[in-house]
Length: 173
View 1 (cartoon, one colour):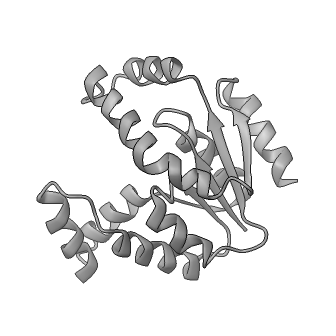
View 2: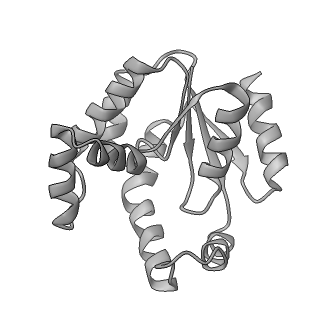
């Protein structure tokens, strides 16, 4: 089974993915960590990713999809945190999905997201950067999410962490 968690930056995807992975024994996968792992392991793909990232560009969809495919072959039960992020990735994934895949959208008011991100105190989480991340999400990720609309389960991400977790566990069954 694969669980795909979607939501704006700061919606609680990673928090929920970590809780679910611990409870269910699933592998928690998100592209940024996979990129960092490949770079740290100095794989040929990692060297290519490092070069792209250091140049300030986004890692190509083909590379991201290659890493996702690798994970799907290594692990039976996966929680994808924020993947797919755009239409090309969504199109790729639909050709590799299973009937039991679970698509979950954590919905929150944009102002709540902004407040969460500003209050978590991460370096670089300025209002301008947060607004830009939200804009990129709306432009690139939201269309990918709509691609999966017929499969999507919507959960109020504004609830308490344990309430959101319980609702997700209820969906899993």
